[in-house]
Image (cartoon, rainbow, N blue to C red):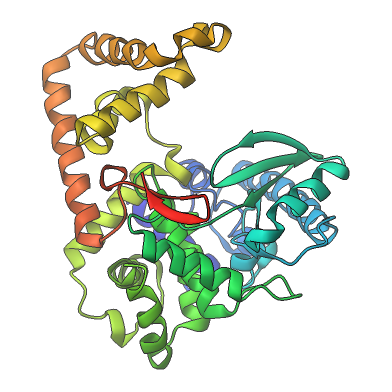
Length: 384
C-alpha cells in the first residue's frame, strides 16, 4: 500500500488526474529518492495532514531557491571555450515544471583540447578544486558544485565509450545543449553508470520524461541504433516498460514485449537504493560489496584498497602505509561482517542478494566493475 502510494503520487505529479493520498512515509520516501519537490504545484489537491503539507511546502521552497541559484550560476559560468551541459537542466527541460526537478552538480564537458583552458578559467574566477579524478575535476563556489568532465562514458568496452564521448563532443554548440536523442543517450548512460552503486527514481524519471517528449515509436529505430553502439538497448527497453507499468508513462510499441518480471526486479532494486544508493545501509554493504563488486581476486583487491584508503585515518597521515590499506579494510569487513548477530545466516542472505543483483545486471546488459571499466589515458580509451 505504501509503495503504491509513492507510485500514485509520482504519476499524479507528472500526468495529473485521479485522487491521491500521501503520508509521512510517502514524503520521506520521495525525499530519499530526490523527487520530493515534484508534487509541489499540486499539494493543495493531495490528501494529507496540514502539518505535513506545511513541512512539504517548506522543503519545496528550499529546493526552488537552490534551483534559482543553480540556474544563475550555470548562466554565468566563466568558461570561454565550447562546452555542453550534461544532465541537470538538460534533463529538467523535459519536465512539466523544470524548477521542481531536484538539482545536484552542474556537469560540464568540453572538447578534449579545451579541458585545461576551462579548468583554468574556473580557477581564475574563484572556483576551488575539491576533487580530481581521471574522469573529472570537481570545483565549488558559493555552495554550487561543478564537475568538469574529461570524459563522460564509463562503459566496459573502449570502442563503445569512445563512440558516446565523441558523439557528445561532436554536438557541442553555442547553446550548450545536446540534440534530444544524444541527450537521451546521456541520460540512459547515467542510469547505467550508477546501477551497480545504486540508482534512484530521480534518474529513472529523467529518462521517462525524455521518452515521453522525444521517443515515440517512429523515433525509436534511430535511437535504437545509437543505443546498440553503446550496449544500452536492453536497458532502454526495460526501464521504459518499467515506467509504463509503475509510473504511468503512456505505452509504446517498442517496449511492449519486455518481461514484466524483469521490470519488477528492476523497480524493487531502484526502491531499495534511493538516490545514488543513499538508502543502502552500512550493515548490508559489509559483504554485498565483496560479493557483488569483487567477483574476481583482482577486483576484490581493488575494492579493499579503495575502501581502505577512504576509511583508514592513519594512512592519511603516514603515506608509507598506503600499500597496506587493503589489509586494514579486509579486517574491517571481517570484524563487521562476522561480529554481527546471526552472522552466518546474514552472510548467506547477502550472498544470495548479491548473486540476484548480478543476474539482474546481466539481464539488463549494464556495465559492472568486475568486467573492467574504460578510462581515457594518453589520448586513448583503455580498459582497466
